[in-house]
Each structure stands twice: as C-alpha cells, then as structure tokens.
Amino acid sequence: MSVQFDTLPNGFRVVTEPMEGLESASIGIWVTAGGRHETEAQNGIAHFLEHMAFKGTTRRSALEIAEAIEDVGGYINAYTSREVTAYYARVLRADVALALDVISDIVLNPVFDPAEIEIERGVILQEIGQALDTPDDVVFDWLQEAAFPDQPMGRTILGPEARVKGFSRDDLAGFVQSHYGPERMILAAAGAVDHDEIMRLAEVAFGGLTRGTDAKVLPAGFASGERREIRNGLEQVHFTLGLESPSYRDDDIYVAQVYGNALGGGMSSRLFQEVREKRGLCYSIFAQTGAYSDTGMTTIYAGTSAEQIGDLADITVAELRRATEDMSEPEVARARVQMKAGLLMGLESPSSRAERLARLVAIWNRVPPLAETVAKIDAVTVDAVCDFAANLIMPGKAAMAVYGPADRAPHLDAIRDRLAG
Image (tube, rainbow, N blue to C red; front, side):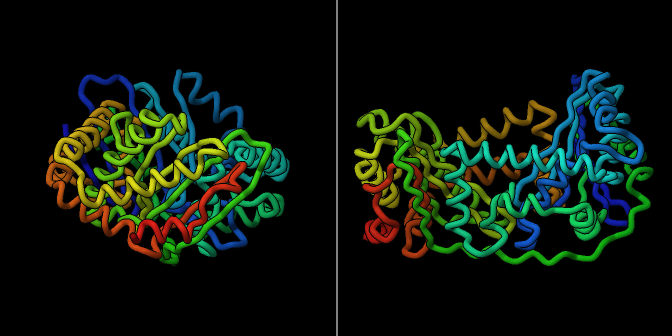
C-alpha cells in the first residue's frame, strides 16, 4: 500500500494511505488556521469556531451530527492547535462516505445559531476555568507567553475570558471567510479507504469552493522572558524551562528530538535518573521538543516542593551543561530507537497515520517516504547531539514559567548565567 496525494484545481489537497487488513478508517479535514492566525482581538476564536462546528449546520442539528456518526458506531471529534484546526472521524469501511459528508457539512455549512453560540460560550468559559485550575496545564501556556511575548504564537489557544465573552456571530463567520479557503484545507484519510473514491467525494464536497486570499502570518520570534505566579495554597512548585529549538522544516529537528529523548524522554533519561531516581526530588520530570513551521522549543517540566525547587533547578541546569560534553553513544542510540519505535508504533493506528499525513502535507506539501525519515533519525550522531546541546544553552534563548509556592525558585537571569557558564 502507498500514499497517494492529489490537489484539486482550487488548491484543496487530498492525501490517503490504505492500510491492508483494516476494516476501519480515519478521515478528517485539517485547516491551516489556528491560534497563531488570530489577531489579538480574535484570540480564542479559532477554538470557539471548532466548538461551533458541532452545534448545527444548514442540513443537520447538533444532535443529528452526533447521531449520524454514532448510529454507525463511529467517533467524531476536533481540536485546535497553534497552527491548525482539525475535524476528524473514525468509522468502519462502509461508512467512509458518510463520515466525509458529515465532516464537510460541519466545516462548510455551520449556521452559528445565536442561542447555540451562547450555550457554547458558557462551555468554553468552563473549559478556561478548568485549565486555570490545573497548574501543570496552565504553566505551559505561561511558558509559551514568556517565550513568545506580544505575538500570536505566545497567546493561549482558549483565549482570555474577556475575549471569549465578546465574540459574535459575525466574528465567527468573518474568521471562516478569511481563513477557511480550499487552499488551506487538507483532507487526510488512512485505513480502509480507496483514494479514487475519496477524490470523487472531495470533488463533490469541496471542488466548488473559491480559492481565498493568502493570510499573512507573523513570523515567531523567540524571546527570553519569565512569568512567576506565586500561589502558596498549592502543594508543589510547577517549574518549566523553554529553550529555542529548530522548526519542523529544519533538518536539525531530528537532532533536537533525539536530544530531548536522551535528556528527559523516559525513565532511563538523564533528568529522570538524576532528579527523581537518585535524589527523589520530584514525581514527574520530563523534557520534550516541540516544533512549528518557523520555530520550536525544547521544554523541561518538573513539579517539586517549595523547599526543593532550588536543588531541582540546580541539577537541571547542571544536566543541560553536562549534555554538551559527555553524551554517550548508548544514550543517543537509545533515543534514536525510541524515536523510531514511537513513529512506527503510531503508524499502526489509522488515526495517527491520517494525522501524520496531514501534518507532513502542511509542512512540505508532500509526504516524505518513511525510509527517508528513519534515515534522518539514524544519521544523528553523538557529536551532533553535543553540538546541539551547546547551542541550545546560549545566553538569551531561554524562557521560564513557575507556578505555586515559588518564592525560593531561582529567577531566569540566574539560570541563564549558569547555563552560559
């Protein structure tokens, strides 16, 4: 089986990958319109729009949308990120056409009923409140804000409460008009699918759309910033440190991801062993490397007590510095294998595979062969990881957010000075 990729005359892209032996399929529309495509006044509207897609169309009520998929045993959902909004479903082979019909309906024909807008506004405000009550979630939003201040990339996906309270039907319709052109949509399907049939259905549903205008996206600029929220009623200090990393389009992304795995990607990683296993300073600690179209961030997170936050920060900085000199071949080999295993295991799921197809098309406008990706992972060397680690901790490229009883937490300037040595 192989990936097939086609583009309709209006720019709408279709990518499919049949998976032999499966009786189910995952199919969805990925729109390259997320949080970073909003103006400051629109912050949160992409997410609001995602919610409203399920609240009724010109053809179906909210209940009928749910029933159409669930009556055949399927599943439908959506999410908003900083760069895309996705609407997707998982169904059996016989119901692929139905799933695409429902998804195209909610994307193309939302009615934005004023009564439903008010109901969903309340739901989203509850979601914001829930996030604010979850320290190990909200601290990542604050880290993003510290790393990308005063720019779309640094704003929350959910948006501030005051903005969400003010969005109108015209605001929602205007965002769709500006950002939901066919050239910004990708239909991805994997599993029990037939490419020619998907293309026929896509032509019927999306072929008549008129290409939109290119929306300008402000380039992201990583900055060194700090956000510190003292909350003495919490049991733990939630500590996050962000370091500027490569974008998806940079070949160094593979080095960055191998480094992130070796530093804090699992139980055998340096941070887990040094901070938790040897010293018992925390329950949870990890490092991960995230990427966007034009930038990225390696993030370290840990939660610890007010008394131990200083020690935890000191050891974290020491490990960041040590990684520039003595990363070993067994560590790098283990991290490479972890990356490949994660990639290949994910490909056993049609949902993961469809999402991967959409993401690669959004980045490259093609789907690189799996062997090409694996070869780039295998090509990462110890020297490359050590060089990356050294560049990562250069002065001026760190951001930090802490939340909780954090009076004893070091400030970012002190951490940067120690990183610089």
